[in-house]
Structure formats: structure tokens, C-alpha cells
Image: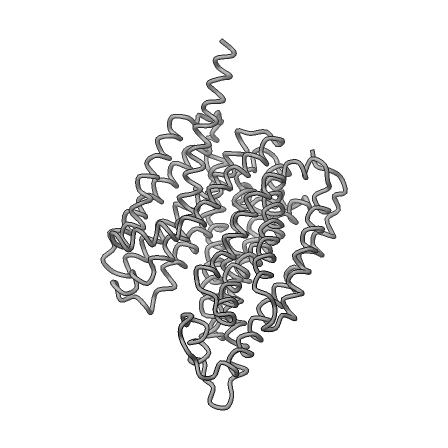
Length: 487
């Protein structure tokens, strides 16, 4: 009888993991598959002026709701919150596919993000609940294959659906996946929780968090076009953050408990994941731009830079469990960050003769380093807090990763544009430079000799900011007081 129960428990674990795998694929492919359909969406819905909000609305609501769901999951249980998130995400996907106008599409995308805010962090939390600390690294690496698969096949699926059917099916494809996840979780996931008699909602905490994130993310969108308004929004975000910290410190049942951050090692995991996610978006966006604009490499070949990084991320994540068991976390992080730093320092001195293959090597090194460090950040952030706070801790780290990518994407864009504009003279216009960056391989541009150095200087400035971020994260990990292997 006992062996039957054990067998059933193991079967349930893999039913749950199948659901988690599909959910991870479903939410991560949403980004890669939609980018392929954007030109068709913009053309059909006449939405060029609002095209950035198709992605931003999704990211914004995801960021705001992630820590809220983390807290609710710790209080009400994982299953009910996860199922709610899947239902909202699936509904948002269905409504996105039906959208007759750009405004309705943006609202539907915001609804999708509200669902993704529950699904994305809770996939990691559920893994933490059903697998031991020693098992977790390998299971997390296995689940990472869903993320890697989405990066590889997302653009292909998106292109096929747009060419053979219409852009609407880019969203409809997630609907059956959502139903499968709901059924599997309903059948396989049964948690034992003691619900509190009264759920106390930290309304002020939620309000200040929402004001902070909305102000910050809108400021990033306006950084290049309306810098003074962006500065005002950044100030509002900073004030809201101060008020949020004060509120969390005095509220009995806070949205993000300050107790989590009493462990310096925990705080360092959050900061490391946030900053490295900002570095990640840098090479994912600007390596292809460098290769296409200066080396005239095709879009497909330039995209392989990101693909090679994703493949190495997946492979490297399977070694995390072994490394954590044998080495102090700060030594793992410092060693790998130093290697990353050396690669980017080389880029700062790269001219037109810098070999194309070197970009692929740097991208693969990035994928390896981040696959180990960020996976370690996830595992340790869950392990270093009490069991009652695992959901909140995971959501805070997920929020940090989302913010790191969203904020730095805007910052890099502003740096690139600013440096280009500062170098315009002698009749050279921003439009001419833009035509080189976005042109196809066959396009002939008269002023290439004058434009290429401008683009190169702007790219150097972008990666100088990446170097600064890596130095910051290196110092942060150096200050980690923990000098023991974490068991």
C-alpha cells in the first residue's frame, strides 16, 4: 500500500511538471512569437503610433501583479492562484486574437500580463514545493528547456501562423495550451495548506508598488523622446518606492516582507538576477544590430547569436546542482562574472576588423555564465527564506528579472540614440543612420564610410554601460558575507 502511494506521488509530480513545462513554454513563447507578428498587426490595425504598447502593456501588468500573486500564493495556496493566472492568461490570449482595433489589443495584452504575473513565478514556486533542495537544480534545468524551446521555435511558429493563417492565430495558439495546463494541475496537484481565517490585504503596499512600477516603466518608454517628463516620472517612482518600503516595514502582513531581505545573501541573489537580466537584454538586442548594420550579416545569421546563447544556457543549467553542492555561491558568481566582463571589455576596443565569430563566442559564454548564475539565484533565493515565504521570494526575484530587462532595454535605446545624435554633423541626419541600421543586406548607402563610425561609437557606448553593470554586480557579490557551501 505504501509503495502504491509512493508510486502515485511520483506520477503526480510528473503530471505537475508537465503542466509547469507547458505553462513555462506558453508564457515565454508569448514574447518571441508576438514579435514576428508585429508588422502584420501594425499594418492591419493601423497602430504604428502605439506599437510599443503591444509589448509594454503585457510587461507592465506582469511586473505589477507578480509580487501580489506571490503573497497570495503564500497565504491562499499555490494551486488556486496558479489556476486563476492560467485562466486569465488564456482569456487574454483569446481576446487578443479577436481584437478588432489596436486599443482593444493593448487592453487584452494587459489582461494577458495579469495572468502571466501569476503563472511565471509560481512555476518556480511549485518546483520548490514538490522537489527537495538537492533535486531542484536538475528539475529547474529541465524546465528551462521549455524557455529555450520557446526562444528557438517561437519565431518559426509565429512566421508560419502569420504566413499561412493570420496574426490572430499567434494568440489563439495559446488557448488550447492553457486548457491542458488547467486540466493537468486539477488532476495532479493537491497541496496541503492551512488557510488563514482572515486574509489581510496590504492595499497601501499594492498601491505604492503599482505607482512605482507604472511611473518607472512609462518613464523608460519616454526617456528618449521626452526626457524631462521621464525625469519627473522617475522622481515619482523613487518617492513611491520610499513610501512602499516604509509601508512594508510597519504593516503586519506586508506584500513583500522586509524579513526576507535580512539575509544579505538573499538580497544579493535578487540584485544579481536583476542586473544580469539587464545585461542579457543588451547582447540579445545589440549583437544582431552590430552584425547586421556593420558587417551586413543577414537577419537569420545574426539571430543565431541569440540562439547559441540560449542553447548554452540550457546545457549549463544542468551543472548548477553539482556546483552549488561543491562551491561557495559567491565564488561561482565572481568567477563567471569576471569571464563575462573580460568579453565585454574586448568589445569596447572592437573595430571593423573584429571577427564575426567572436560575437558568437561571447554570446555562448554569456549563455553559459548566466545559465549557471541566474539558475543559482532562483534556487538560493527560495532556499534562504522560511517555507511560508517561498512564493513571495520567488515573485520578488521574477519581478527583478522582468524589471532588469525592461528598464535596461529603454536605457540602452536612449544611450544609442543620444550618442548617434551627438555625432551628427555636415548634413548627416538621424534618418540616414537609421536607414543603415534597419536596412537589408542588398541596400546600398552612399555615406557608409561616414555612418559606420557613428554606429560603432554608439554601440561602444551601449556596451560600456554593460561593463559598468558587470562591475557593479561583481562588487555586490564580493561583499556577500557567506563563505560556506549552502546545504
